Image (cartoon, rainbow, N blue to C red; front, side, top):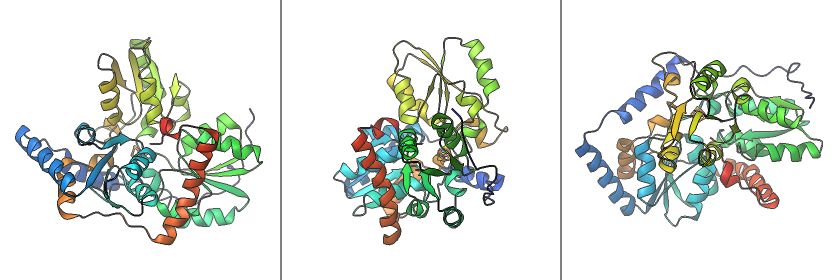
Length: 369
Ligand code: SF4
């Protein structure tokens, strides 16, 4: 399929850099949360949180990339573990008046956009995402204004203000059908912010797209050579890849999918070994569902001692039992969104949900990061 794009002619704004300093700060905050607990400390924290959740009429919703402790606690306390959209939808359907969102900031914002009547708290409100950081609302707005002939489609990993300026919001699972739908209407697409997911969608659809040059600091680290080498050791292993990974890694995949899509693929009864290219938090769910199987981290090109080498998102790791207990006690870290921004951001999210309903596409099975 031939792909026509004006990317080469069009100059994108200079994006904020994700510096070592930014990553180190996130890692330092994360280290406070991941520091070892004694068994007694862990039990005391879990007891305290469980009691406070009840007292505060709160429910814990955690992303697949958070720690095993948080995922287990969410499940055992009547909460939920999911991708960001499902986190927000679960929160909407649950009767609790307070949602505790263990994840990164755009997830808390999505929960608030869809559930304005509820209080949304986060263990650490500074937990963010490189895709969100690399797509500031002012740069995005100026770029959209300069290219009004394009329909703007943004990935869920963006701020409420960016969503408010977009025509569509998509998750990785519904991106392809929506872009195909826009192509049928002869629309050209301005895609932001993940360049790898954007390129994947462009390769699959052939649509004329302007692709914002952002990326995920974790998925960008996966290396095709490393996967090929590992595959020699485990020739029967299936390669599961999240589409935020580079094209040469996606090309090696047996299954390309979102977090939920990859977990589903790992249930395949015919396959017992998997090489997995996504954030390592996903192994909790995969191993829980298939305890006898072998799950291997896809090799990354991370620098020794940095977050990239351990495939843990430094911002996701800022969520822990300690700050969760603190937030429940103090009511700190509440997500607030100006009402006009919230209402504008709701429009492209609703458009995606309506499209999914009309097309009977299970967004639920194919969420985003
Ligand atoms: S893993 Fe990547 S996409 Fe997900 S929150 Fe972290 S930086 Fe963002």
